[in-house]
Length: 256
Image 1: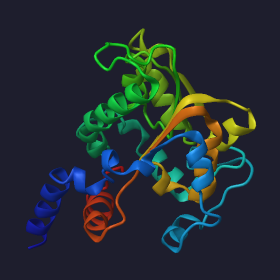
Image 2 (image 1 turned 90 degrees about the vertical axis):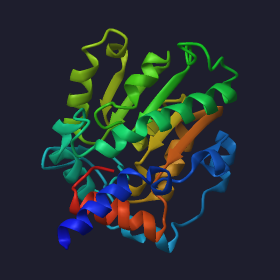
Image 3 (image 1 turned 135 degrees about the vertical axis):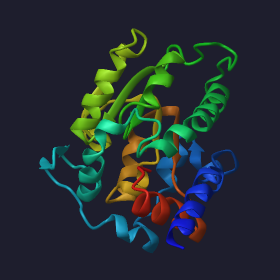
């Protein structure tokens, strides 16, 4: 009985990726100008976000090899979880299998939408030439690398130092991706350093932060005027919770 249930959950998870994640192309709030993002933020996180606000970070800290930087909005427990499986980022059949499977869909949306926004040729092999992107919560670099191959000048940041090490080592194997700037830091720290980017991307990250509102403010602050901020996350529905949280994370121990 339990085996059949697990098999059904696995099948549903692999075949319902579009239901698990918010349909980006049909939800305008996922792609807005810098000014729109900055003005639309709520004063306080909604009650549905309370579970992410239990571990606010201030100052430098380390947990199981996961270093968080000054004024980090990340949840310490989440840092430890991703640090423990950092070596598996490029294993397409490992804990990050759902992200590998989803990556072509994410990249197609990013390419289409940002080419339209920045008036670039989507048919060009390197349409993002001349643009600066930051991949916030880059993990092992599975999104940063294809963005670099599309011509963008990419900075990948993550609060887990093991992720940055894995990402850097993998990127060095290709001259095109070896130019990616990988930093063990946070969006908040980049704001303090007054860094700016044409496009700021945070995909499947916001559900892991301690303070979603402050995190979004930091993303907006990193975006140049008339730039682009792209965010994706898991739906807040019972079906998404059952497949992406209970089945994927608790039972199958996949990373989302």
